Image 1 (spheres, helix red, strand yellow):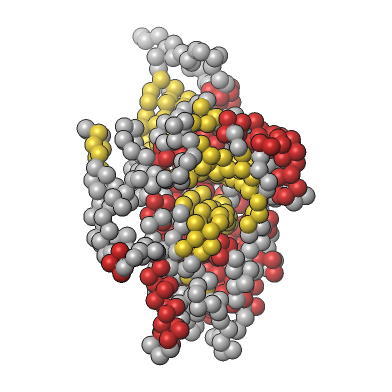
Image 2: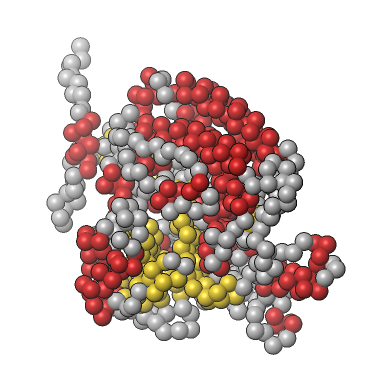
Length: 192
Length: 429
């Protein structure tokens, strides 16, 4: 039983909802067209295909593209040892999808983290609070439009932040710049 | 004369059950006698090993609810990674699980190499050095875990013994990498330098010394009545719970699940090495302690085998490479940069733009001392990741606390926390 077989079994059950499995470096990825049904797909994968461990849930900000968010689930089965990656896109207007905490309890903290750092809500989550940042922090720092230096914020008597002095950083060259000044700016303003 | 009151001795098992049972829907569990107390533990408490805060709700001395509060050590590592080249991020990985920086370096380098498609083309000497590094890190991390655990439970001597051994590992790190703590040793496609003269001999000598000390710790703890009373049948994690909450590493194996990434998905040269994977039977704090003890011995065994077989031998007379031979991935030797045009260009491109990775996405899980440390890299090509997610074992291992703590006594908190062996640097990232 390989991950590809299991992915095809999942496709046989949900048909056109799932894309063709793609393989890169021996890892199988399935794309789910309808984020509303993610819990159902996950429940089937756990119950019928033996994916009993949820390794990770993460999110990607496709800033400037639509749909803006991609949610990535990493599934693993301890008995067959296969991994499966499940991806689904969520639009910025909606920014919401059902929780999978009912399938794996490990999803609890992972979903809270996605909610905290990216600002995507999980409908039906038992306790959707910020987990890394504090209650009342106004931003979602992993979004691409949030500068790496940070933004000033204040919750009186609780906590505050100021933009960090990142002298001349980030130091990475920007590929595709038209001249050396644009390619290698010593001090790139935090807004870009 | 005062009235004599009957003292009722509460049955801990029944209490644990009552605490675990859910209240009927729409109705909060009522505190009729008004004797619940909320105790704030941390973020700065010796047994929280860093900055973990737990809000404990107590009924007498029994915990009825535990709410962990994390994030005090959040530095935005994932955000930072998006803004620098793959190589520049290596020193940041030191600061994840800062008790096993070498293992983090190895894990991260392997993840990027998987993205590049060169993870199975690493030179053999590099693979062996990396395995030695990862296993030394495991011994170091477990030594600290057990030493601090014993100290939390009142056994000071063990701490002194294990820290003596850790000091030797730090000396080995210094010889090998030039730094004791924040090693930053691996590079994409290899390691930063070959083993220095005399290092392999020093490792061998350390292994012979550490087994003596592990045996001594064993005599101090394993059949110690106080230690056993405080850890046996405390913090029992069932097999199902451990899997459901995504526990990994010694915490998962303590619950009797035989799952070790070094066996399940062998990477580097683990396929050629012989070692056993210890598992627990009950899943209590004592089992997790035993698993860590045995893992240290197995690590010693692995390093001995690596030293026996390391290609090129101790002093690498045959000049076995320690990096892949690809100028587009690994920095060229300095003397060539100054004399040869092609190497100069490679050097320039690598330093300014980073290793040019193909678009794609990979997840690589590494068996770290604390559990599965995974890096998910989403690349759109070029020298920086578009998104880098760190799946940290401590984060997942701690998520079981709200389920695990209720029903235990307040004094069991230290026993449970210590047995989970977490690091907040990795949990909060």
